[in-house]
Every structure is written in structure tokens, then in C-alpha cells.
Image (cartoon, rainbow, N blue to C red; front, side, top):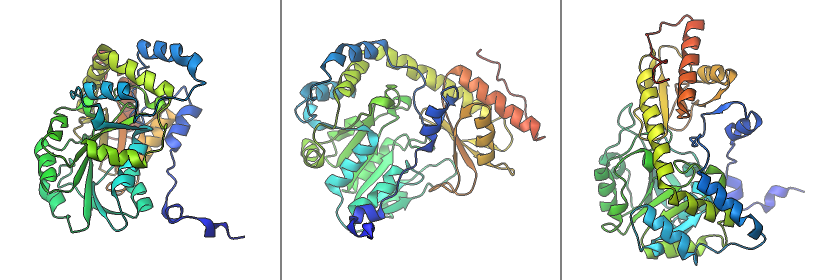
Amino acid sequence: MELSRFFSKAAKVGEIYNLHHFRLGWQKPEYRRLMGNELVYPPSPKVVEAVRQIADRLNYYPEDPYTDVELRAKLAEYVGLPGRADWITCGNGSMEVIDLLYKAFLDEGDEILISTPDYSPYTRRVPLYGGTVVSVLPVDADFNYTLESFTSKITSKTKMALVSRPNNPDGHQISRDLVRGLCDTGILVAIDEAYFEFGDSPVEDLLDEYPNLIISHTFSKAMGLAGIRLGWIIARPELIEAINRVRTPLNIGLVTKVAAMAAIDDADYIRENVRRVKEDREFLYNELTKFPGFYPIPSQANFVMIRVENGLKASQIYEYLLGKGYITRSFVNARGLPGDQYFRITIGTHEDVLGVLKELRNYFEENSLPLQSTSVSERM
């Protein structure tokens, strides 16, 4: 029997997203996880205690996000929009959040502008809903974009634009003026602020000005709660209502809710972790500039992506670091990142940063590559 005849159109065009790097991280717990842009610091003690206290009630269903005003009100306060719980809905991590946007707003034949390179599930999921991806390329090697980069791609079929701010995988942050310009076009504008705590000038205040603006967030980065899977969307109530119509009921678990609320309540813990990451990000970036053939991209996120030249291969550097116990990411012929030129390092502890820099020095020395003096012993 030919079972493929039962497949839906979505199943026929869909791709399996191979998260092998996370598998590797769990198989090798002794390795340093510098590949997934997770926070290396453990959850706040307040989060651990909140989860412990709810453990004996896990036999009950959680409240659905649609009626859970308590959770949504807490999220609204976190981004400086108190009293706007009806502007928020939740998803099971950023991946479901993106799917919810596509389910709610994409129809067969619609086009969506996506900055390139991008977080790969953005583009992988579009065909499932009948949409077409229109890639928007940066104007220079530092992954800067202009408004014209986007507006020149708009057609009568364009429904939406989707941009990370800061962007994954390069860390660049588009300007507020560019966000305004996109909103002025009248299409839906979705801004993924997964890394906004590590950058500056969030755009939540623009929601009052632009009813076509949608902003998404996650607890997987600065909050250090990638394991609980919570993403959320902020938009005008009419848009939120449409998203809730296509959202799976009870998609947020009880542990997820209590962990998220406890994390928000421990603002000092969040601020301190963000401070450490930003400090080590700048330190790593500055040190990487001293390696001949390395061109780190200025980043407003919790990682640094490096372009390699002078005959260097990103995949070889990745394999070398892996052999030394550091899991990073290499991008070989990835969308918007041609060739074997790019690899990325998530900011870990300061000891992680020093360790990676030490191994990169060793790689250069073992391969008889010229190397400038670096200061990897600083800030020990």
C-alpha cells in the first residue's frame, strides 16, 4: 500500500527540522553547550521553588491562556504594558508562536517577507500554510538592512514581514525607524524580540501607533527557561482574538505557567545574568577581532557569529572545538550564509569564553596560522 497517498498537502511539503545539536548536548553533558543560544546559568531559585510547590497538583489540567488573565497580565507588565492582558496570547515556545502567526494570517498564495539569514523554522513552516517566502537580503557584510531592502519586495500578494530583532543567527538589530517604515507600508509586521533583553530600544511602545504591528517573545533566552517552552505574542486585541481561534487549547502547561511567573518576579536575577552575558559578549567580540581571518559580526544578542576568510573553514573550526568539549554551530551553505564561512558561539560563562579563545589559539598554532597577541587571561 502506498501510504503517501494519505498525506496532506502540508505533510508533503513539510521538512523535518533536525535539532541534532541539542541531541549532542544531552548525549555529552560534560561538553559546554555554546550552540543553541540558551542561557548557561540555571533558573532562578524562586523558579525552582515555585515548580516544587506546584508538583503535587500536576494531576490537574492547567488553565488555558485565553482565560488565564493572571499570566497574561504578568507578561504585559514585564514589557511595560500594564493593564493590557487582552493584548497577549501564548504558545509552546517560539516555534509554536510562529506557527500561530502563519495559521492565523497566511492564506494560499500569500507572500511573506523574511530577512535573510534567519531563524530557519521561519521559512521551513511557511509552505505548510500555502505561503511563499520572499527573501530580503542585507546590504552589507555586517547584515544591515535598509527600508528599501523590504519595500522593493512588496507586491499585491505581500501579507506580512517577519524580522528578528536582534536577528538570529547574526545578532544584528534593525533600527526603530526601519520598524516604523515597515509598519507604514500597511502590511502586517511581525517582530521577533526573542533576544531583546540583550539589545536596546525595544519597540513595544510602537504598538499604540501601529495596529498592524505584532511582537513575539520567549522565555528561552534571558529568562533561562528554554526547557519549559513558553513563547508569547503582543498585538492589538483583534489580532490576538484571531490567533486564539487557531491556537490549540491548553497549550501551556502548569509547570510552564508557574515557572514563568516566578522568573518575572525575580527581576534582579534576570538583570544580573543579562549584565554578565553582555559583558562577556563584548569581551569575546574584541578578542575574536585579533584572529587573522576572523570577522566577528557586531551583536546585540547572546551570541557572536564569525565570518572566516583566508582559506579558513568554519566546519573545520567547529569540529576542532567539538573535539575539545565545546559545542558551537557552523553554517555550511545555510540560507543567506553561502559556503563554509560562518560559525557562531553562544555566550556561556566567562570561563567558557576563555576556554574557547584558548582552543582557537591552539587551532591556529597547530595549523601554523599567524596569530596576533590576545589577552585571554584578562578578567580571570
